[in-house]
Image (tube, rainbow, N blue to C red; front, top):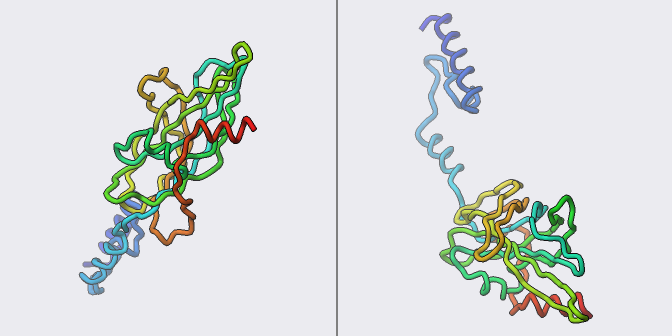
Length: 222
């Protein structure tokens, strides 16, 4: 091929690399007579891109916004998140201490409740589990005729995140799906999900029996 023809091919490859994200070095900038990538090198490139099996999942919880519940005039409301694997029941997941976030008091702003979690739920991925969701609930505390009432309600849950392979889902604002029996929610949860190997330096807390109502009473009523 003449030099002018080679220069033309090179320019086409450079243009293609800008579109595809492949660098000219790895795309097709080889002059006639140069050795092309061997089968071994191609295999190595693909092997490096193979996904590794994930053993831990980290739910990094940020902002909860747009919770369209009526403002409590004589009481307080607290929100928390629970990790739900596959089709596990919400109740059974809530009964595991490390599956839940802390309770955070909501603030009523612009006709909606809003708050910042600023924490992580770190768990070992159960065997044969394929995905995880984050379920948002609230606890309301009101007083009627001098009597304190505590109520637990579901708000909504995120779409599922696949957890079989190591992957990082960057922070995004997730529209919540309305929980069964709950008022239709407009809420969003900003979060990041990391599916990592077991050696990743994130501590998994010990699982203990847990009752969110009793825990709330001990922490906020004493």
